[in-house]
Amino acid sequence: MVKPNPQPPAPPKPKTHTNNAFFTNALTHPYRTLTIAFVAWKLILFLIAFGAVLAGEAYDSSADLVVHGTGSGTAPRNSLITRLVTRFSSWDAIYFVSIAHGGYLHEQYWAFGSGLPGVVRGVVTVARSLGLASPAGSDGGGAFVEAVTGIIVANTAHLLSTFTLYRLGEVVFESQQREQKQQTTLLPLLAALLHILSPAGLFLSAPYAESSFALLSFTGCLLFALACRLDGYGNHPVLRDAYTVLAGVVFGAATVFRSNGILNGIPFAWEAVRQLAGLVCEHPRRSKVDVLRRLVALGLGGVCVAAGTVIPQAVAYQRFCLGAGEGSVDPRPWCGGWVPSIYAFVQSYYWNTGFLRYWTISNLPLFLLAAPMLTVLGVSGMAQLRGELVPLSSTTAAPKSAPSEEKSAKISSQRSPTSSSSIQSLLTAAAAAQVLLAVLAFTSYHVQIITRLSSGYPLWYWWLAGKLVQKSTHKDAILANRVVTFAVAYAAVQGGLFASFLPPA
Image (cartoon, rainbow, N blue to C red; front, top):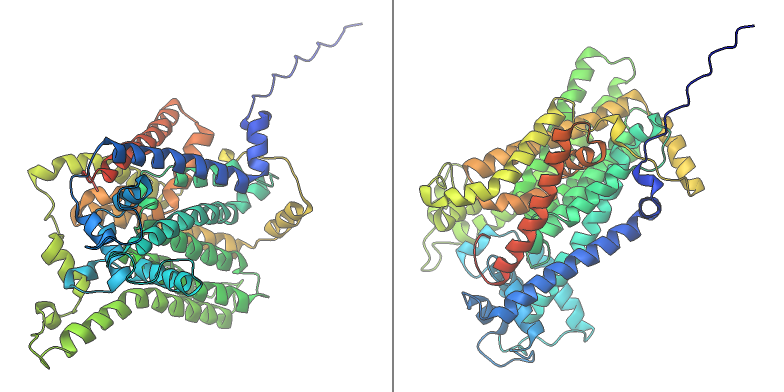
């Protein structure tokens, strides 16, 4: 009797991140993981800033005049905390703090969105009414209270934007989780951790608009993604359309914080074109009435995004153009433009921005500093436009820990093909917006600011997280590690320079 050949032993399964108790715990409690990482990274950055304070006086003292004014005030001027607040209020933060304290006193102030100053002013007003902040005028005419509030708002927004990005990743990639029978993925968590370690560094902690813009942009994307998830069910059209319009409102608010928020209108236009194509082709899964409802919601959302730009410009036009001539003030030159925009005029006249204006030999080092993030934005955006952003194999499972996850997986398994195509449309539109931002920064902006503008765009975080998790090739592994190393190193070095009022900023 011939004995059958014994089957060779199965090869050992490769160890994954979740075999390690640390990673298992991190995936099981993502928000706790993100909070701990956030606090640790902020502590490092603040220690770097403290080191800059202890190293000596800053290169420029204008922030000291804005924060403390000319009087003595109630805050001890030479304490370490007070000096740190002053350092955080340097560079463009001076303008945000000044606007929050006294409004738009000068024309050049209109280069800065009213979102952050408005929030800071509102928080300060409430705090003073509750007796939690010193009364107005008690700080020697300075804006110390506004500066501290701006720092608190910026850091709070950064933490909340981290949570929002994680949730957005869950919604966007839940179809991949379903196909692999996984409840939680490592990719959304890694992307959120990368947002904490953004090369924006101290710009996400100082009184700047970047962290608030990121929070609003991620929230708008989340609402839009939730609307896409409902698209195609047919029994939730009101909720779907409400999410769509609300996403436009939130994106419009983001545009009030930063002008590049207008690029968030691209998903609405992109999806509207796709819906129109379906209407013309009479898609069998959709009724014409439902498509028309969707188009109306997308139109209203797009209008809300545009309003974030149009309304501030209209206010400035009323003040500088329609109100001029009544006294001794003549209308400003921009009032007679084809599209009268104080923002475009101020950026060009006071900051010398415009097409190829920054392309000088002296600015070459700044282009070199911006090159890594310009490359990341361009490569990741083009990868999504080619449909290569995140392979399904890049997800990693965590243990099932709650019945709610089973419910979420059940809901995900019921997703219609229409909703999946809507999510894909959102990702494609986000890629187009990201690539356009990189092109604009390279040709028309002060190019170095791309390291902080990029913090409000989720796509490149997912692309990099996918490279870190999958590492399908040695080249991918090296690229991902180098990008992360650059982000951490740049944020650390730039933090010390920022606190010393040294470029780049």
